[in-house]
Every structure is written in structure tokens, then in C-alpha cells.
Length: 191
Image (cartoon, rainbow, N blue to C red; front, side, top):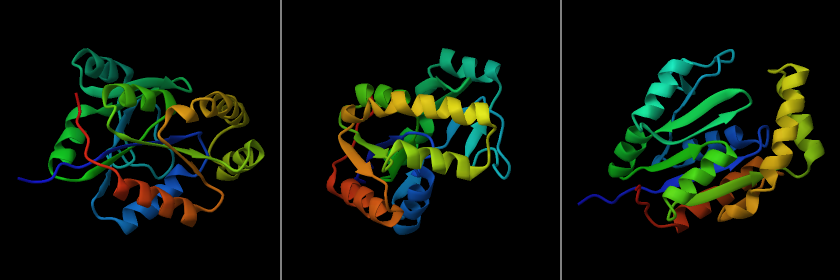
């Protein structure tokens, strides 16, 4: 009988460095897989369908909701995002640790459905540093940056609902802390 993997809800405010830490985790632990979410937002330069996200129309997304195909879904910055349930279950059943890099409210949905999941919230050293990181990306217009900063302020109020809070003032250190958390946790059951 194979060991079931762990479900890891991994979140934090936009621009906090989740993606940077995630790349380090995937490089360091071959039992970790990143769940690919579906979204109605258009791809950013360099993104590929099925790699960063499954880019779908709003009609396709709504059909997936109707068919109960999502573990969680949530609107975020005028787009829809969701975690396809079957892909996550298949990876967990293979003994892989599945990371859901999702937005905060979607993460809370998963925590409610799967209370034995490992939940991790990444925080920035300060809101000023978060703004610097968002602007440094150079991927979004000013109105989107301002919207993300406002959203981030609200998201930060939910950090205490996650089991672990990790400060990202140094990505290497934060990645090590997240790996230690993953290795210390038990398996997950999806309801």
C-alpha cells in the first residue's frame, strides 16, 4: 500500500514572493508537486496553458463549478481562479505532496473542507516592501498594482487562520522553513 501525500495550502499576498519560494521548493524536494489552477485571466508574457494555469473562458469555468470539478474557487481581481479536484486527488494518491498556491479566501475554503491539510501563509517584511516588489515586477499597470495592494491589506488580516505563518525577508530562509513544515506534517484526506 502506498503512502498518501500531503495537501499543502500555500498562500500570501500578491507579490510576497510565493513563486520564488515555490521554485526553490520544487528544486529541493522531488515529492512536491504544484497544483495547476484554472483561471479566466489572460496569460502573462511567457506563461503557457497547463503549466502556470489552465486558461479557460468564463463559460468553461462556470461549467466546471456546476460539475463540482473544483476543490475551491474564488474571484480575485476581476477574474476567477479554481483548483481542479481530480488532478489534486490523483497526485495525493500517488504519494506526492501537492501544493496549492492559491489566493487567501480560496485557501480558507480548502482548510474548511480538509482540516488536516497543512496551511502556510507567507508574509512580507512590511507593506512598503510588498509594494516595492509588486512595482518591481513591471507586469501590471498602476490601477492593478493599487488594487493588489488594497487586496493585500485585507488578505493579511486572515493570516492567523492558517496553521503556519512564514516571514519572507530572505527567500532561501523562507524556503527552508516551508520545507521543514512540510516534512513535519502528516497526510491529508480530501472530503
